[in-house]
Image (tube, rainbow, N blue to C red):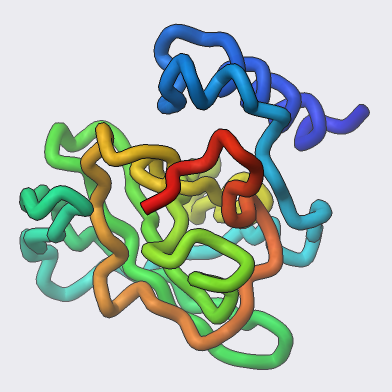
Length: 176
């Protein structure tokens, strides 16, 4: 079993039984596991970050109508299936973690419509690890008790990112 498979199994255990899971007790009763794209090693990228000339604060709307502020930190430029793509990396308000929300051409069909998230890792010597295989749905995808930042327009891609979590399926899923 590889690291990604172990990560996914641990996440299923967390969702199904941990008291801090985003699922309600009723949802946990029917939970059978999250749905994922197969691992795609081509979407595990080591990318240099282009720092923005002006690192300004952006107010991002949440799923419950609130607003959260993030610092626009830098930009990733990369290629997916021969198409150029660009995503803005944000620094969380507390300044100790990076946040990369995105939506793509799978959003609303195969993946959660409001987009998915990534926490990227700085690499020794510069650059970042951007592994779309660990892209995940925000907790608001599971029930209305969560408030999640909605992917800003600048991070909505026209390419398909066929990696990471898919739309939740099953009877345990949030239905509106």
